[in-house]
Every structure is written in structure tokens, then in C-alpha cells.
Image (cartoon, rainbow, N blue to C red; front, side, top):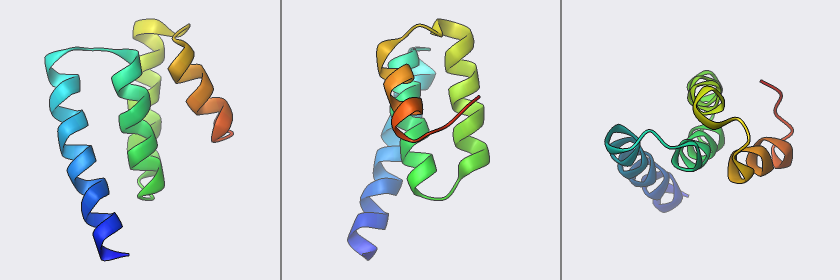
Length: 72
């Protein structure tokens, strides 16, 4: 379980760096999911809301929100 937590933290770090380089709804969808799985729901919602402002029609963002049953 510690290994999974460590991998999620690593994924969060890489995705945050990628999102800083390129404001992209797909990257944000993945970052939001990593945050969500870690129990950081408020941070995930913030990331997803910003992504929706950039590209609310992004299919990866839409699929992620639907799969996790999240309404913005």
C-alpha cells in the first residue's frame, strides 16, 4: 500500500509539472483523478473546474468526471 501511495505522489508531481508547462484539459483530468484517489477532493475539483474553463468538451475530462460520478 505504501508503494501505491508513493507512486500516486510521484504521478501527482509529474502531472503538476506537465500542467504548468501546458495548460491542457487532458493533463488536468489525469491530475484531478490522482488527487481524487488520494482523498484530496477539493484540490481535484479545483483542477477539474479550471480544466473545464479551458476545454469543457475534452473527452478525457468528460469521461473521467462521469466515471468518478463527479459534477462540477
